[in-house]
Structures are given as structure tokens and as C-alpha cells.
Image (cartoon, rainbow, N blue to C red; front, side, top):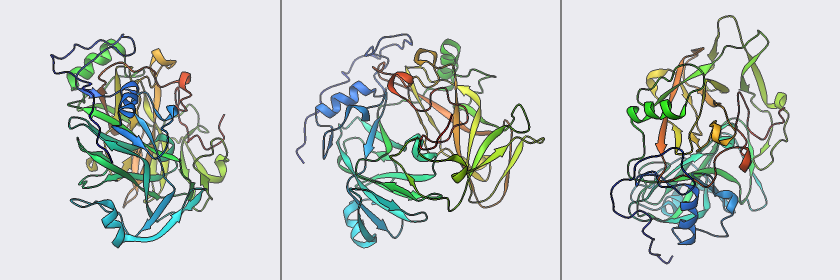
Length: 389
């Protein structure tokens, strides 16, 4: 691979003050998440490259969709390469090589490793982080990105030059994937990106990041679960059915909900009992918004809040639920898995925190109907693969 010199996207000068009503391309800060137009320039300069042409539709407001290549490896167990390379580890851990160029089934309970079409040649001061796409998490497909020499999943250090791999483990439904399937997305960061509680309170005061109820801000924005409907027959969640059948991850609006999901109805106690090992789709009590100046991420599971994990797919793009992007608050859909013991989940119980991260400049496009986003204005909603009103 030929190393290409990166353009100096961020000249060393004093920080630029933030403004939340700016035009696309207007600077916000020297440190932050890189918007789509900067990702495009990284592609043009060779800092992000691919086996084939990177399509414009892969470039999201503040992230890049990554694509599977044509080969998958069934592996004995998950791993991190630490000081070595992924290929070296594969020689001892790979059980079977699968051609997925025209589509193949990945079975539940198995672990697969797939090289991605995209690769990186990052400048030293740019790092990257990956997360499953919303539609991936909502069908309980567990994914994690790894790269050569990595000590952590989903994180790529500054200056990394090399290929990327995606670990895939379907947990509830077997799935069909093929070359070009997009299961995860990547953000690029420079410097400190996370907003402090003081900055977040100011953002809420100026922009409004919670549309119903009080904004509970302490180490991020608290997110609680909604289990209270308007009637006894109202659906407040879904529980995945085991052995329901295949899901083709490239086929939207194809599958019947009752075949794959049991409804969870509101009850008098406004609570549910999470069964160990079962997978649920629930919604937040809060309607939230992410202004175009920011992106957001649901922080990882905190073991102190209970015997469950929330939200595999944690990226919220600029404009999610925001009035500037045809939104007036959107629910956060929660992917919930029960752990070792049955656990009672109550209405309005805090299940996670949303961390807001400033962008370096305003993006050219925002999350919403103008770019065909699937989950703007959502309440309780399954993945795009299911037929919904």
C-alpha cells in the first residue's frame, strides 16, 4: 500500500467558538467528530480507500458505512490481535472459509470474521471508532471491528495504516449477508470530542435536546425506558422469537412482524421481567434531539444498573430528532438483552446515558427524511427489514 500525505485539515490556530445556527462547512471547533464532507476529502486524498469505488450513499452526516468483502471465515472464538496481525491469528483460529460474494447464511451461535472492503491510512491525529448500524443491532446481530495490533474492539488508533475486519455473531436470527452488505459504520475523531455536563446543559438551553420531561444531565444525558402506554392493549416492546427463520440483511420491508417477534403489552404494574438470554426491542421515555452541530453515542453497558445490556448500535447522527431536520424529538430505540438472572425493568428506569460530541464543522446533510433516513420521528420501531405501518 502506498502511503499518501494527508492534507492539513486542521491548522494549528486558536479554537473557533461554537455557533449552533451555522451553514454547512462553517467551523465549530478544531477538535471533534469529522462531518461527511471531511470524510469525502479523506477518501479523495487516500486516507480512506477501498477495493472498489466508495459510493456517495455510504457517506452519512458524520460517519461512513463500511462494506463486507467477498469472504467470511468461521472462527473458533473471538480474539484481539494485540501486537500481531489479524491474518496471523486467522491461521490458527479459522475453521472454515466461506464465499459470500453472492450471499451466504451466517448461523446463530457462531462467530465469523469478514475482511471489509474499506481500509485506512490515517494521519497521526485522527482516530476512528466503529459501531453497528441501527438496523444491525435491532435484529440482534453482534458486530465488532478489529484491526492489526489492536488491544480494543471498535477503536482504530491515530496513524493506523492497514485493513479492517468485522467480527459478526448472529445471536437470535440466522442472517444472509453478501459482498457489499453494510453492517457497521465508522466515525473519525480529532482531539477531545465529548461535551461536558456544563456544555450539554447549555446545548439543551439553546437548542433543546429533550422534548418531554426534564433533561437529566450528569455524565451525559440520562435515558430511561418507556413501559407505560395509553391502554392495556398498547404494545410497549417486542421480544424476539427463537428459531423464527432467516433474515436477509439487504432486504428492507420484507418480513412479517408476528413471525419473528412477540409483542410486549403494557400492564398495570408498568414493568416487565427480562428473561436471561432473551432479546427485546423497547423505546426510551424521552424524546431526544441531536442538533446539527453535534453527534451522539449511547455509552456502553454499566453493570451497576442491572442484569442486562442496552443498545448495541449507539450512533446518533447530527439532526436526529431535531427541528432543523424535519424532527420534533425522536425516541431512542433500545436493544436490550437479559443476562444471567431474571431482572425486573420498571417504567422510567434509567438504562443508559447519551454522550454528545461536537463536530468540527456543520455537516452538508443532516439525519432525516431529506436523505432517506429510516428512523427519524420514530417511536417504538423494529428494524427496516420488517413490514411496518
